[in-house]
Image 1 (cartoon, rainbow, N blue to C red):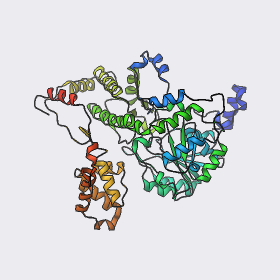
Image 2: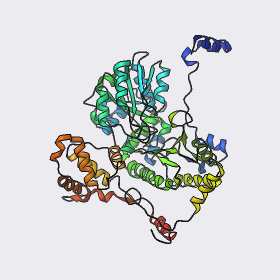
Image 3: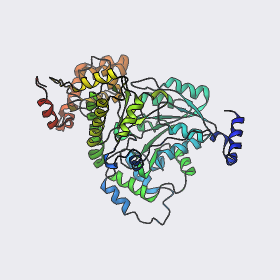
Image 4: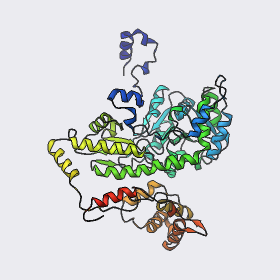
Length: 514
C-alpha cells in the first residue's frame, strides 16, 4: 500500500491524520456476537438458540463459582497488582513455582504482552489456519507477520522445517502455536516443541483447550527457558465472560511480563471466579468436561447421517467439518443460523469450505441434528434439484438393518483402550499422543491394540525397539486395562455413548436386526 493512499484517506477525513498510517487499512478482528444480539437479528428466542460457534462451556460456571463472585468484598478498592493469591493457586494447579506465573485479562492480554516484549518490528511466526489474534495483535504492534501454513486436511500438521527456516533465515523471534490448534483440533507433538525450542526464538504454546485434550508442553518448561505455555478459564471453567487467562514461563521472563502489564488488570470478580473454579476443578471435570467430550463423540456419530459433512480429527471441544458436494459451506452456515443453530464459518482462505462446530450439551446437539435434517429436506441449499431429490430419498429410505461398530461408536473407549496404549508405551519409555494413535489407525491394520502399541513403541525406539517383545507389551497393556494388584483397570471407565432407550428404538426400526 502506498503513502499516496494513506494521504488520500487522511484528506478524505482529516481526523485520520492523527492515526498511524499502518492502521488506516488494518482489518478489524471479527468477534462472535452475543446471544441476545443474534436472537434479535434472526427472530429466534434465546432459549431456542444452539450456540456452537465459540467453543464455550455451555454448562456455564459452577454454583460455587457464582457464589464466590457474589460474595466478593472490597469492590471499591483496587485489586492486588501482584496477583499474590491467584498466582499461588495457579502455580499449585500447574505444579510450578508462583514466580513462573502471571495472569492476564484472558490469555489475549498475555499474547499482547509477549509481543510487546520483543523489539519493535520483530518477526512473528504463525501457522495458519489458526487463532486469528496472533496476527491481529502482531500487526497492531507493528511486527512482521511470517505465516508458515500448515499441511492440508485432515491433520493440518505443522510445517516445522518452515518455522525453523523463518527463525534462522528471516530473523523471527516469536513463534505462536495453538495446541490443540483452533480451529483444526490437533495437538503439537513433543518432538515439534523440542525442535522449535532448539532454535533462537521464544515458542508460545497456546493451550486454551488443554483441559479437554489432556496434552500439554508443560513438562518441557524446565528444560527450555524459551518456552511459554498459555492457559485460559474461558473454555473448561465456563468463564469466557470473566476474561481471565495466565502464562507459565521462566521466572526471569515472567518478571518482565509482570513489569509491563497494567497494574490492576485482573478485577476482583474475575480473580474470585478463577480461584473458586480451581477449588472445584475435579467437579468441573466430572460434570462438565467429560460430558462435553462424550457429547463430541455422540455428535460425530449423529452427524454420520449427513455424508457431505466430513469431520477432521479433534481432541478439543469442537470439530472442524469439511462441507462436501452437493452442499456449500456458506449456505449451510447461513441456513443453520436462520434456524437458530450458530456455527463458525470461514469465508476466506483455506477453510472457506469448512465449518467448525463446538461441542455443547445434548440439547444443543439435538437442535443441530434437527436443523440439518430440515436443510436436507428443504433441498434449497443443494447444488441442483436432482441432487436434492436423491439426497432426500437416501435419507428417508428406511434401513432394514444396522451394523454398528463398538469402540468409539457404542462405547466411549478414549479413557480405556487409548489410555492403555499411552500408559503402556510410557512404561517402555515412549510418549504416544492421541494424534499418534489416530494416525496409526488411519493407516489400517490397527484393530489389535496390543500389536498397535507394540508397533508404536518399536517405531519410536528405532533399533532399540527390537528388544521389546509383543508378549511383554501385551502383559503390560492388560495390567493397565484389566487392573493389577488390587488397582482397578481402565476398562471400568468405559461408558455407553448412545442411551439404552436409543438403542432399543433403533432395534425396533430395524426389521432384519442390529
